[in-house]
Image 1 (cartoon, rainbow, N blue to C red):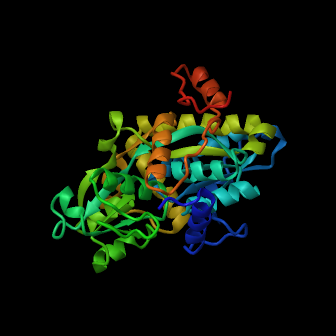
Image 2 (cartoon, helix red, strand yellow):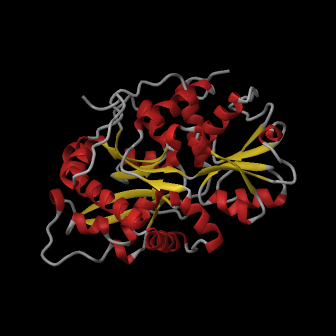
Length: 370
């Protein structure tokens, strides 16, 4: 049965609050990176942007957030921000990042579409704006090949998703509904059992046999393959042109209003980072992995890193039409009342940066700030 949107959001946040963060920071939301690349590399004679001492940037320790990983590791953000220091904060849950944004613990963040939608609708459109895109793809259904040999075999099995109502959870529920299967979204019970499992422990759950597969982002998908799993479905195959938003860039609305030059600097750095990633994929992959090691204390092994990296596409386009479709999927699953997403995007500064770079501007699919 569909649930009240605010009730769902409270439940989703409560579920995530119970999950451990990578490291508890003083702000109470995410861990601050100790990476020297975010503290040094301030060019002599640089000035502060908008008079700010720092800009606090949030992201996940996922390869789908590699624009942020590489931008921090290679100093792209620090270069554009001059004497304003980059302060990274690492999260492993969307609601926690939204809370940090709302409290001012971060200013700008890399995040998935579902948390952005939830944060925007919960605040009646007052908390955040999506100001750019970052990545597409990188989500797969990986299964135990001994138990599941075809898509129809998924029925009756236990499939993990990262959390109730998150981007992959919504995608799996929508796909299951398209198969004609009935699943209660809240309990996860039905023709297929949905087991909400933190990505960090999903590989162990797979090894123990407590799940039969998982619909997860990279690098978790490739970690499961390394444990003997088989990719049964790449979510990209379900979308037009095989493109769908997996990571957006969001900003706190008051920060956007008060510090547009700082926002422009971060977006310019993001565009430069994506350009460098696409021109230097091997170097970029190594840089992302180095930052993952800095942030979490552990780099990804080659047999996980390589296949994970090739399935992600880095783009400045927020792929706004696919975000709208993902919201419709959440409504269809009964996880969300039909949201009003009018004005969720403000792509003005991004398009200014793209024009200056001599590349095509991007579209908000009718959901932009007028």
